[in-house]
Image (cartoon, rainbow, N blue to C red; front, side, top):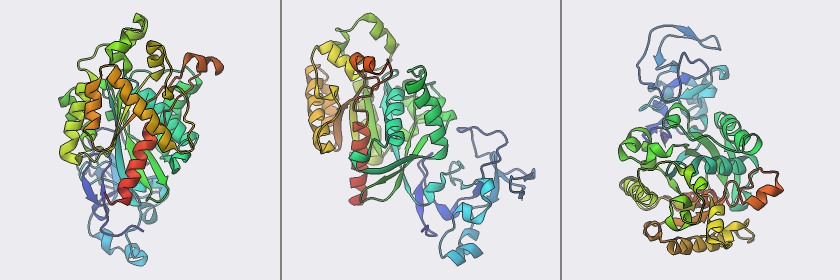
Length: 397
């Protein structure tokens, strides 16, 4: 039931909004909008006919306004009949795809926000650290294969736009066609909607998980983070992708062609983690779950000439014990690799965990799958931060 005075945090700009004050717009009729454009262009007087035949003369940016965000929402006939704030699809024809719009950034909001809080997951790392690969692999496994079931997640369902994009831009490219992803353009996340999922976990309220696929170039400079990736500083959870190719002792043992793949970097990853945590603290404090995750873990085994717990899928009946044991191994490995600063920063954070993942898997495992990726432990970081979000809900945080 949606109460009349319910408040939510906008997943796009982070502003707290009252749903009753939000205008309702038609999102099935868009003149020229692409996500990331300014929707605050004010009202226009050119009448248009929406797909349902409704004539509308005012617009919010590129979207026809079906109802302004006024007290009419509280006094309308349908509101009185229902005894609650009606959802947009209860007030207007569904062919218009009615959605509330944020009163601050004017962006159309997910319909599920009426019933669920939204949590922002920031995935941060250097350019070519493997963020897109990680997102594509873990989100595909979580939603397509219900891989998070053993982590206490009852459902992990992509919203409609996200489902199409996840299949087209990640699953098909990574697992069916070329088995590779292009580098993320620097402003790509401004032109596309974030990836959004509805999550249901045992003994907790359903919630929306919102994440962005952001280029490393947009993250390594404080000015570009503030201008184009402001969601990082207000994240509810953080997965930091640490590239083993940025670790000197690993890089020394690998051939030049492998190292050539990382390109040019303006900053080291320990400094990026430090700056990210510093920006998070004034907004969220130390209560943000942090999953420090080494990507390309198969390269570590290759460079160190030995195997690790993270080289095989989890086997423990209790995933928490298994992830904790693998995490302890990762922590000591980072110390062995002279990456003490990464360890110190994580240890000083209240809710930190350590992980190592391989999206492509080992060469041996790929031989068994005709060269296709054979992901290892890619769900551990996501399952861990979702569990911590659930515990935060239970404890009223």
